[in-house]
Image 1 (cartoon, rainbow, N blue to C red):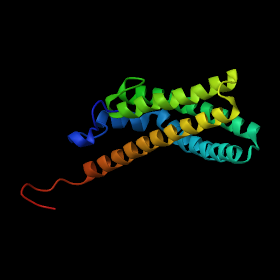
Image 2 (image 1 turned 180 degrees about the horizontal axis):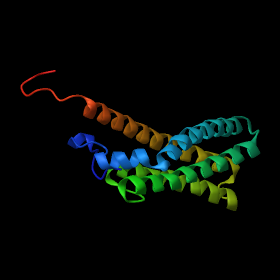
Image 3 (image 1 turned 135 degrees about the vertical axis):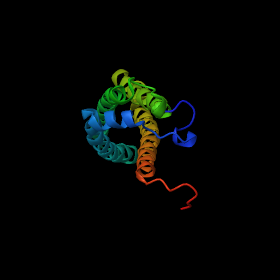
Image 4 (image 1 turned 120 degrees about the vertical axis):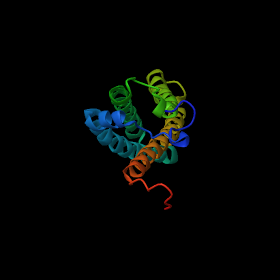
Length: 172
């Protein structure tokens, strides 16, 4: 996560060579690579079930269970993501390279947790809980997009770094 803008905007790569080495050797990198698409699949199924319930008033139990499963998938990826960030950047959250992604992740986590609290207490009523789930899901989509853009930036950084340097005075 970045404190003010991305490293790419300042000409610095997303990862230093040492951070890249730690990223590539960390088992948490693979865990994140597996959990992210699994969580996205759970999200898609749950989104369908929530929208079906809101449209038809049918399938409440399935929709509710799916949001709970999605929330626990989120918790899993957040915890392992913190372990990954610690392994790569030396801190559990808010490393400069992922600062804004982590900040927005806190909103995603808060909305999903608010859903669980509303479910446990009966707050908001069933439809209100489903709308809260949709708000949590909207924030998740934004956050997932942040991370995908960061992954793309890291790949572009790697491509730039692997290109041979042009001799002085040469143009591409």
